[in-house]
Length: 96
Image 1 (cartoon, rainbow, N blue to C red):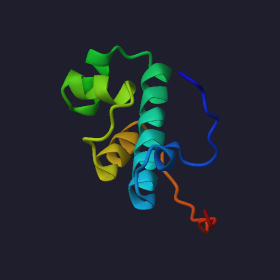
Image 2 (tube, one colour):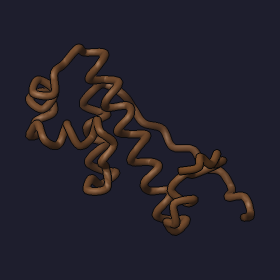
Image 3 (tube, helix red, strand yellow):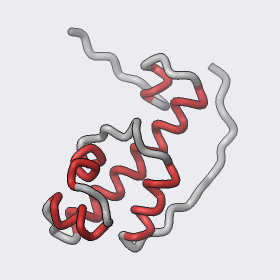
């Protein structure tokens, strides 16, 4: 299998529409922040699940990057529960 370096949004390179690629990238960024928070608090997945009020398999999916089944809203609330405030910024899309 050959490796290919991509620039920009990897989900776009995987064939998702522009809109889907942006949404997936946002979910991944939120999931990474949740994972960092879990590590910072030195939680096991079971303790993290208790803290966030979810079942442990959801934590497992989030930390493994399987975020397709989560809404951005859901992940934002988890990040906020961890004491972080997500911020939005907007940039004009570059022509392909």
